[in-house]
Length: 399
Image 1 (cartoon, rainbow, N blue to C red):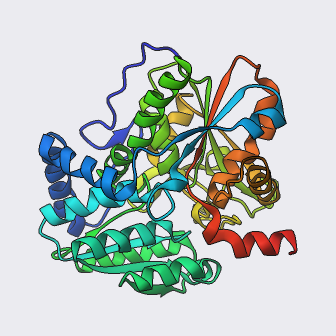
Image 2: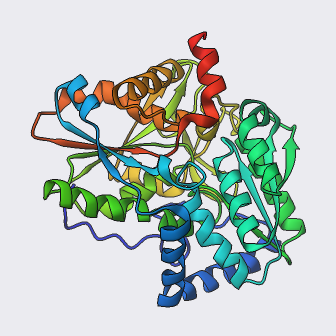
């Protein structure tokens, strides 16, 4: 990728090329415009960034380490591997980065009630956490299937004082939880702020979430330059909606670093049980945005599958769709079985149990590393820790 790339997206209409935009009921146009105005004002305010940076340092635990993966490097015997350790954030994943930024926005907007959707539960936990800290009422929408497979995170949210609303429509997963959250927001927009958990939805959400998550890539760039005096050759991250990957990719897009997003291949992309949106999807309008989408010939959104609740989503952030078309990043998929093997690999080589979302990125190393040389550097974003997935992992391994 050329270092001469000029990148100032989204444009004034919230578009990343032909993707993004604002496809919502009239009721939401005014609150979205208000959100954008307040965010732009705060983004230009040094005091806002000072407050957020202080929270990250004293509450989130930033900066998170960039760990040299000696065991993993020896295992593959090719490029050096480093791990960006978002699993060490307070609440156990990168989701707290965005939740803290948006709770400050909600306070500035004068909202007293916060809603969110969650799949893996990590975004729900992060939102429940910041609502508890700042004293706002919290309501989390979660699919019935995800409630069952993420019972530990459901308990954490309840302990933090959040109300959990089970969603029983559709596939009873993240897509359906998001639909219900949007319906709630349309009805209660006066006193409610919707903290979207990924780089999805109508403008300005993809931009806001990306900017709050870019702290991952900003730190990574500083840390690898300090450790190696140069940028990496590759950065690998999992992609569902796409916030952890955009967060680490964004500060590197004007460089020659190869950016690789790894989607959930489920039972295999030759089946209809996967979430390989950027591999097999096509353009569509979904949950307020234009983006790549898994859909049938009639344009109906497909029922998708992933062993990872956080990647179990038929769409993707519109900026990722733009990245794909412009070849700013490359996208691949790995299956459920490969992700489980990735979990075992990182656990046994490094003593780090990753979230199943992150395990997809680790699993892709089996394809990438053979193409690398010993003088190259690979960074993998470990977006979350695996505590929440232990029952699923245990069952998959037959323990």
